[in-house]
Length: 256
Image 1 (tube, rainbow, N blue to C red):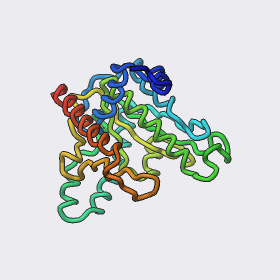
Image 2 (image 1 turned 60 degrees about the vertical axis):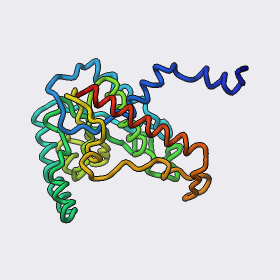
Image 3 (image 1 turned 180 degrees about the vertical axis):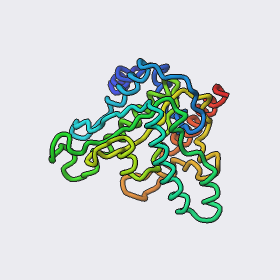
Image 4 (image 1 turned 45 degrees about the vertical axis):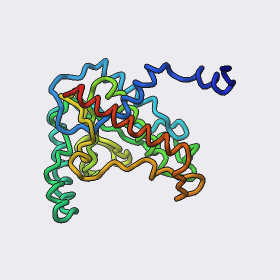
């Protein structure tokens, strides 16, 4: 069978099967780690690779609004954890009944246990008031810093590092704990380190907090809310979601 021009272009730009599978394995086995951190130090060479991956994230107008605040001081970690504890207690009061009881049993941070903390921020003034791509949707710089978070997270997974995103803070308290100026927006405080294992499923899913939604219910065609369950893409999505669950399960078994 002859190769079409479109297929030839696709093959010339695609990764090898092994490299492509490695990318998807990192995506499907990535977890928000809270309680499995080991005291093993993270070598600077490894930390450099994951920070470099984060720096190569896409950004609106190529403004690269992020900074990476690396935390190894036990004293600073304790200040950050204290800020978390205040917000965590406040958050518990926002839930009612059984939901509050379940929330209070969840471990939602590894600030002190993890060898490294990394706070990724957003400097919304970095390249001036007018930014290509941010002229109308003003939050695009914040989303750019979130892309840096995801790049770091996936690179860390490839290195065998666990990452836990702690977001239960009063923003000003986190800024004070880390000496972040008021004009700089904290995006993510990440707990980073080697772990004893990776769970096969997200911990909140296992705890029954929320299920993973079927992807076929989240894909619309051409207009919002337009579902077409007969579309060939839906069949592929169902198959690939099952494959993703299998990859995650194998990763969990390998760490057991």
